[in-house]
Length: 104
Image (cartoon, rainbow, N blue to C red; front, side, top):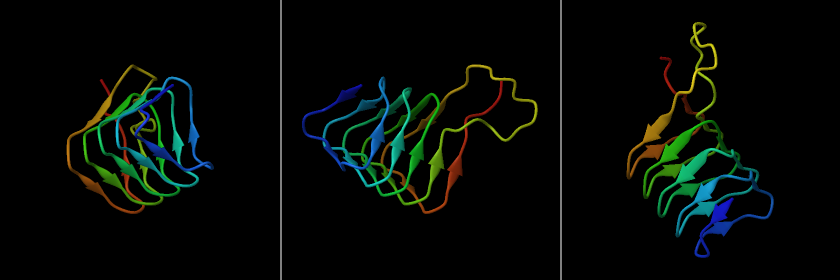
């Protein structure tokens, strides 16, 4: 796990070994960051957010409560292949949003 010294992480947040948290990030209470997640500079993760899978979040993106980003696709053809979700810079991912990687 690599957490930049300038990042702010709430004590109740779970950040798994292998996650990369960039400079000036803020991780809110009860959020879960998986082992293959990479956050760019200044990403704000509000409370109760799940970031999983092979996922990259671009600089200055804000993710609001109860979003679930990077979990396995809902496509029934998905068989566990190595896919990736990349979110660009300066996005606003609002409450309850689900974003999944694609299939091959």
